[in-house]
Length: 200
Image 1 (cartoon, rainbow, N blue to C red):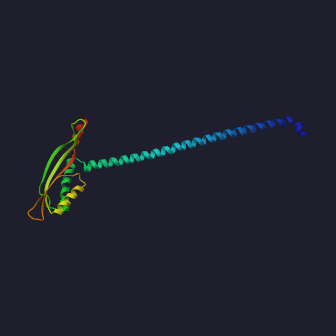
Image 2 (tube, helix red, strand yellow; image 1 turned 135 degrees about the horizontal axis):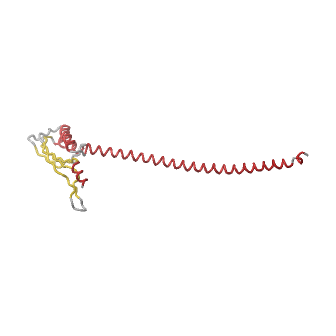
Image 3 (cartoon, rainbow, N blue to C red; image 1 turned 90 degrees about the vertical axis):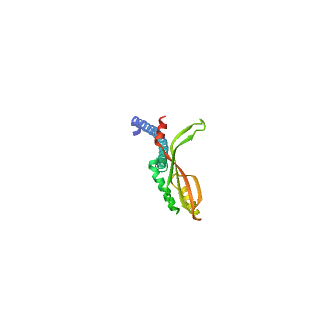
C-alpha cells in the first residue's frame, strides 16, 4: 500500500501538522491574553481620560466663577466703593434725584465734613487705617410728612453707599410742610492710604 511506502513522508507531514496545531493553539491563547490585556488597558485609560475631563470641566467652572467674582469685585470697587473724585459728584446728583423723586424741595445748600476711618483691632487695642475716607453730607429740604418718609425710604434703597447718620424734623411756616434736616455719611476708597499701609 502507498501509505506504507511513504510512511516516512506521512510521519513527517503529521509531525508538521501537529506542530502547526500546537503553534496555532499557543498563539491563539497568547493573542487572546494580549487582547484582554489591551482591553483592560483601554478601559483604564478611558477611565483616566474621563476623570481628566471631569477635572478639566471642574477647573473651567472654578475659573469662570473666579472671573465672575473678580468682575463683581471690580464693579463694587469702581461704582460703590470708588475714590472720592470718581464718585462724589454722582453722590450729590443722587441726593438731588431722590429729592425730586420724593417731590420734596431741592436742597439749597450742602454742608460737607471729611475724616479718616479707623478699624479697631480688638486683639491689640490699636487702630489701623483701613484705607477709606469718611465724608458727611448735611442738607435741608422742605417736604410734607409723606414726602419726607418717601425720601428717607429712597435714600435707604439707593444703589449708592449711603448711611443715614442723623434725621431732624421741624415744623415749617405752613402746617402741612416740614423742614427735614438730614446728615448722611458715606465712605470713599483711599488708594493712597491703602498703598502706604501695604508698603509698611
